[in-house]
Image (cartoon, rainbow, N blue to C red; front, side, top):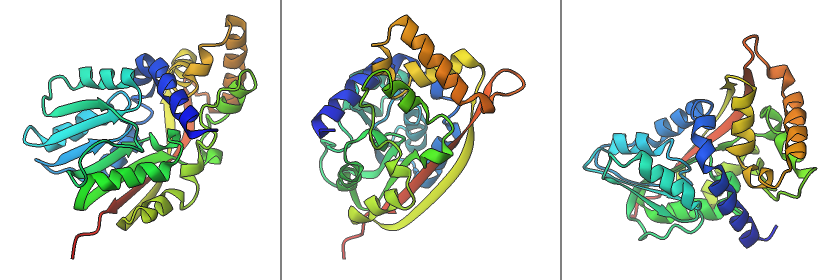
Length: 274
C-alpha cells in the first residue's frame, strides 16, 4: 500500500476507535505496558517524548515518573486520540500533547532524554523511519524504547484481520506482525545507530470479561474500526460470529476470554559523543 494512503487510513481509523479504545484495552495491555515502562527507567526531571500515544494509557505513568520538574510530550497521528490523552492528563500540566506522525516527530533534535512508543509502530508504513525519528529526538546517551505485538502465530486474536478483509478491503495494516518477527525490531534499532540494545519477548493472556467487551475492543476500539463503520448490521453480525468462532478455544468457565498474545520490547541508547 502507498505510504501516504496507509498513513491516512491509520489517522481516520484511530479517530474512529478513540472513544472505545481505553475501555477495551486498558486491562489486556497492562503487562506489556509495564514492561515498556520498566525498560524506559524514567527518572524525575527527565524530558520524554511518546510516539503513537493512543489514549494515553502509558502517558500518565510516564508523567508521574518525571514529576512536575520534568516534561512529557505525547504525540499521535489521530487528533481524537490526542484529545483523549489531553483530557486524561489535564491534572498534569507538565504534560503536553500534539498531533504528529511517529515517523516525523517535529521536535528539535536531541531535545529529549527518552523516546518511547507503546504498541504503535505496527501502524507506521516504515517502522524503521519511526525509530530513526525517535532517535533523532533524544540527546546522546538518551534512550529509545518501543513495544510491538509479537508473531502472528502467538496472537490468538489475529483472525480479526482476514475476517474483516473478506468483507471489505480494509487496508488496515498489511504488515501488522512484521515488527514482531524474530530480530526485526532489534534490526530497526541498529539501523538507527542505537547501541546497548536489549530485546525482551513476553507471552501473556489477554483477559476480556465477556463477549461484548471482547467485540467492542476488537471491532470498535482496534485497528479495524474504520472498516467496521462501513458494515451493514447483517455483515457486522456475520463478522462478530466468525470472530467469536475463531477464539472459541479461549473461552473461560466464567463466560469471558483469555486470549494469548505476544509482545516484543526493545531498548537502545543513543551513542554518547566522543
